[in-house]
Each structure stands twice: as structure tokens, then as C-alpha cells.
Amino acid sequence: MLIYSHPVCRKHENENDVMLPHPERPERLDAVEAAIERFPADRYEAVEAPLGEKSDYELAHDPRYVEAIFSQAPTDSGVLRVDGDTSLNRYTIEASRRVVGAAKAAVDEVLSGPERRAFLATRPPGHHAGPCQPRGFCVFNNVAIAAYYAIRHHGLERVAIVDFDVHHGDGTEEIVANSDAVRFFSVFQHPFYPYSGIPPLADNCFPIGLPNMTDGEAFRKGIEESVWFETLRDFRPQLLLFSAGFDAHKNDPLGGWLLEDEDFAWLTREAIAAAGGDDLPVVSLLEGGYDLEGLEDSVLAHLKALDGDAG
Ligand SMILES: [Zn+2]
Image 1 (cartoon, rainbow, N blue to C red):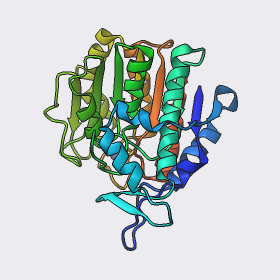
Image 2: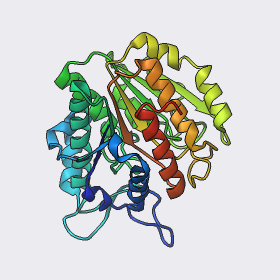
Image 3: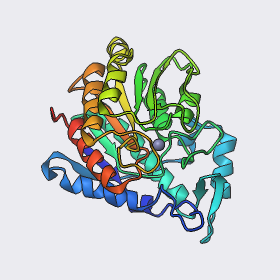
Image 4: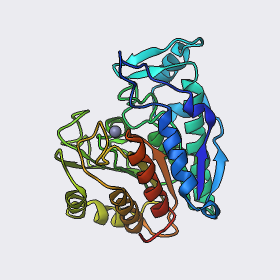
């Protein structure tokens, strides 16, 4: 497996509210790093995330939006809020370009082999960012850029996105709705921020909304009883992308669910099995997850499942 990261991803910061640290903070990557250190060293290669290009963003975003964000980003020590809970600092653009560069490189690598699995230990996250809108700690939609990169540059005709962040991936859905080449699967707390997802925007989107206090048993039942696995089997994706949020963990301060590490591993394994199994190219991109211990343990469980550990 390939694991992409870059030190600048730790330097992007959101503006804190008075007395309260912003939940999407640099220390999250320390927790992810701790998980990687617990993963067997002979099972992965650490790769420095390359720099994506400004033009890559136009795969998923309006060029005017890309220009507006790039030109507004601070060049001094200031922090600019671009949404109620999303900010830019002087490192945000480079951090974001490392995420996009890693996403492209990871897609290239898993499609060409021999490594079929990649994980992006990067921030800022992306799944709430719409075609022209920052939202919910997200400025640019990394997973949508990865999907359209695979479609435009590798000619793929079938890309599946599985989003298990506790929040609906509204930005991703806005971008991929009605795309013939993409199927979007999102499981999320409902009703809950960002209050979207049900009904879906288009027939290529497969939402599962489950209530506050959903535990692992209800989570697995909700997914097993949905159309997800049969739809993945019928679709036979050439690439599977995970929007890997871990804020459904039972200790997460934002999410209202009660999942444990093994529940994330279960979904990872089952989605891969339904979508194509061991040879399936898979790239997983970090989204949410705000309890640092829960994040560390959940990322480790997810990595093992990505690597093919039967659990
Ligand atoms: Zn989230």
C-alpha cells in the first residue's frame, strides 16, 4: 500500500472560536501518523505528496471559484474565513495542492499497479466543498477531483465513491450528480448537518441516512439492507474511492453515532469485496474525525482492511 502525506498539510489552520479550538486542527494528522506507525512497516511505502496544479481544480470546480480562492488566500499571518467554519491561512493553498497532487498520483499508481491500494493522510478535507462553494471545513473537493481525474486522464467509465463520514458528502453529491461514470454512496447521520442527501439529487447517488445514536449493529444492518452492495457488484467499478471520515466514532465530539474501529474496517472490507475484491484499485482520502484517539484507532483499522486484512 502507498501512504501519501506532506508536512505542509499540518500547517493549514482554521480560525478558532473564542476559547474553543477548531475541531479540524493540525493535531489530527499527528493521530493519523500514530496510526501509521502502528501499521506494519513492511506493508506500506510512505510517499511525499506531489504538488497538484491549479488547473486540476477545474475538474470539479468552476474556474472562477478556483481563481477567487487562490487570489484571496492570505500571504501573511492572517486567517480568512470563507465560510462560517472554514478558513484559509498562508499554507492552505499549498496544503490543498498537496492533497490534489497526492490524489492524482495515487490514482495513477493504483491503476497501473502493482500496488492497488493508497491512503491519503492529508488535510484539509473536501467532501462538503461544492462546485463554487467552501463549506464545513472544506475548500476544494478532493475526492471529486480524484474521480474526474481518473475519468478524464485514464478514460475510466466506472468510478465508485463510498463516503462514510458521519456528515452527508453534499459537495461531492452536487458535483457528481447525473454523471454517468460515477456512482456515489454516502452513509450519514440524518437529520444532521448539512441537512441534505435525502432525497438524493440524482439516480447515481445512493444515500443511507440513519438516526442519532446509530451503533455498529444498526450501521451494518442499514447498509446490508440497502442497495449498496448489489449496486456496487452490478456497477463493477474500475476504481473505488473512499471519502474516509471517522467522525461516526463513538467518542467523536461532532458526530452523534456510536461506531467502533472495527465498524469502519467492516465497511471498508465489504465495499471492496462487493466492488471487485483483491485486484480492485482503491484510493482512500481522509475526511473528518475529531476525537484524536478514536481517529488513530479507526484509521489503523481502516488501513488494515484496505490492505486486505480479513479482520
Ligand atoms: Zn464529517
